[in-house]
Image 1 (cartoon, rainbow, N blue to C red):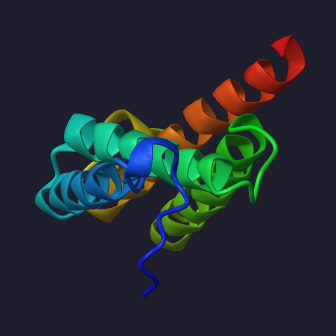
Image 2: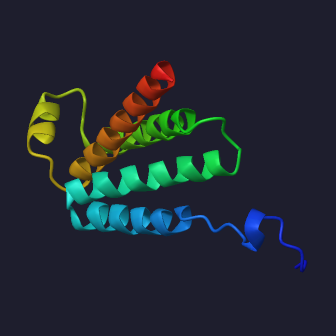
Image 3: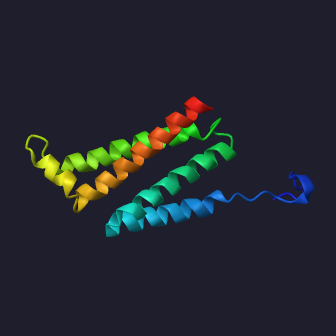
Length: 129
């Protein structure tokens, strides 16, 4: 570690994002595993927003909208895959599972819903910017 500090004013910059990544990860895991779906969605939104913020701050992404849309697409695909493994699409039981989400189906719907929210925000933000 060098003795020279590159930051203006003699102080090193500290990023706040790792704290929010950890908090988002913990809240999303708590919400998904315990079955608190609003907490799961909020935690996943915080996690994805923090990851997009890290990517933007470190100049890996030109803005936060593309990473948000990419994470949203990944979450949506993952959530739909989780729901598809639990519901037989050949029967009309799909509507009953969506109306009364219990167990793994509810968890998959929370992940897919978060993905749709993130994808929408990312696309709208990219278009408006």
